[in-house]
Length: 345
Image (tube, rainbow, N blue to C red; front, side):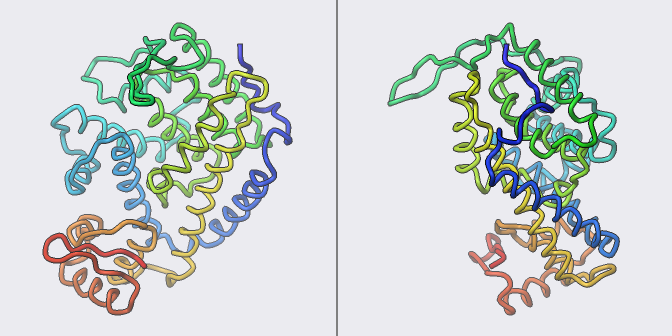
């Protein structure tokens, strides 16, 4: 059986770039802690936007596309009208719950099962079950081929997931452990074990956000990691696949995915710190809130999306701010009419 000795992994198990990023992240965390008390009002806005972005991008990564206004309604507690809407609402509810109190969610297989039940939109009273299939059908070279779902057989998944969770929980209990390295390493293990027939990747990303909270790195509250994963989807899956081929051998190299994950966190910190350092201390003006909204977005926003994201800012103020930011050259105007959107240059 594969060993999940997270606490005992030698420094040589990771690349030099991983360690450089690891050091940079600790420095970025220190800079953020020094600034956060001066920008509480701004951080509250960024947190609300990051929650929306995480829910929206996570759904799109899984092929679920929904109108942004409806996503916001589900985040705010609207009753889901379909299985897909239950998945979106469940993701939002779980993310909000562990950001409020991460200690309520222990690192164990029971937490995985409970979170998966919510994430797949299971009907009330129905609980998730472990993977049942050893093989899946995939299109390869123009033909449908039957390939193994995982190096681990279906009946082995509870044992492997339980062992991975127990070893990670033990490692996290050590305050001196290298938690930032362990989080993406554990994510690779989960995706290779593939404990569920569907939703494993989405759950691995969400559980990583929980582990970030437990490790004391809450940048994911203010910048959407799911949005960055969507933005860098090609690199994300390339790094993951680089780890999969040798996962069940002693030569398994986690560095490609660990490096990718840490680079995403570094990008998130850069975006967050830039937004904070360029903003005045104290409560931002209404116009500044519109600018702040775009500071952490790499995708276009329509006026309707801005209105939904900033409910306490009047329509006229938003229109004036968008016009001013476009004239200033901070935003690029795309399209015309109702489809007009704005993109930060």
